[in-house]
Structure formats: C-alpha cells, structure tokens
Length: 153
Length: 152
Image 1 (cartoon, rainbow over the protein chains, first blue to last red):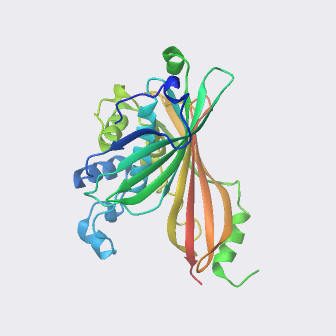
Image 2: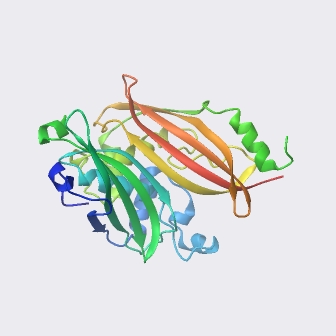
Image 3: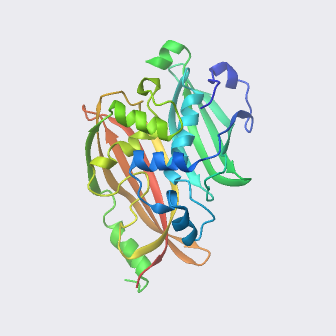
C-alpha cells in the first residue's frame, strides 16, 4: 500500500510529531467489504447489507473494525518491508467508518532508540480519518535493521 | 456481593483470569487463505508477495466451532450487554511463513470495572496466543471489550 520503505537514516534526525508517512486509500466499496466478510468469516449484516445497517441506525454499511486494524497493520508493515518489521501495534476505534469513505492514514514519529543488536526501535503514532472524522488511533513499534540482509533474516 | 448485575458479572470473570477460554485448533498458512485475505485488503492476490500481518487473527476462524477473532468474546458472560470495542493490541514476534502450521488459544487476560460517565463499565480483555509447530509464539492479539450494561 505504501511506496516508500523507511530506513534508519530516515528517522535518525526525526523529532516527536514529525510526519513519517501519509496515505489515502481509495474509497471503501461494497465489493471490498463483501470480499473481506467472505475471507474472514464475518457474518454480521451491518458490514454488507445496506438496509440492515440503516435499520440498525447507521447511515450506511459499516466498515469492519478488524478490517481497519488489518489495514493499519498492513500499512505499517509495508512502511518497513525492506528495512525491518512491525513488532507491536495497538489500534483503538474512535468512530464509525462507513462504506464510500476514503480512509486517510498519517504516521508520526514519537521517539526512537538504538538496540544492542544495531537495530533501531521507532515508536510511532497513527491516526486514521475518513470523511473528516477520526476513526482510529494507534501506536506501534517498528524495528529497523542496519542492513537489508539483517532485515530479511 | 453487590446487587448490580454488571459488578457481579465482573466478579465472576475476575475469578477466571488467566484461564483458557477456547482452543482455536490449528491451521496451515496456506496459499489460498493468503490470496483471499490479500485480496480482501485490496492487495494483489499473489501469496508470494507477502503475508499480511493480521492474517494471523483470521487463520483459525473457519476451523473454530464458534466465532473467535480479533473481536473479543461478545458472549463472554451472558449477563453483560451493550458492548463497544475498546481496541486491539497485537504483538508480532516474527512474520508468518507460507505453509507452516499455526495453532492458537484464547485466554481471559483481565476483567475489571471502570467508572464511566453514566455509571460503571465492565472491561474485559482477552488474549489470543498463536504459536508454530515447535510451540514458539508467533503473535499475540489482546482485545478489549467494554460493556456498558448488564441484564438484571
């Protein structure tokens, strides 16, 4: 999903609050939600049945919380795909995300420190907005390895 | 013992802290599951392009008898109701590998009461632990569910 892979030299001079990456996904479609429900075994109709969702009090079909967690993990994973790995992540839902909205991810640097093995642990904050509403917030730890070979081990 | 059914439910759950709620069985990280999950996330379906980290939380679902996933147990105590998802924390100990076998279990990590704006809230935290064929942990998913009411 993301195009640029973070490296140690990218974050070494970063300060808390610096933006490391942003990404706006295409608007979520009904087809995508149906695919996700089928792949993950979700049966709650608020995630694929528009009439049901409206009767339940939502303006439209609701994007699965677990799909939102999976997107966040995927974006962070992609961010270090060539240089390390996603070590820990938490995600809290702050609002409802509806089909037809385009989630926007912003990843900000919080802190970083060197580990004894030469890797660098980067603490980050993530916020996800859709239709100008905050939907998810998260924190994560990325481990950046000193060399590509070490990252692939 | 208080008369509030929410507090009573949490007292019952607190006694079960650390106990296993469910065995999730085992499943292979097979190419079809990876392809379908990649596609569901909007990625190219080719499983050789990488295994999405959160596949771990879904891999064992079709093999389980009941609904168990990153969502906490919505029926962990039949008295508790009106739940909201309080968040998910995942620890990845290593990436998944194609064709390896993963097994999992869910434990009750914590249960406590927190004050809310309109009364007490029941906070229930479950932890799904996933391990490989050598019994080494590969990931842990901690899920928090907050219940705003209880049936008396």
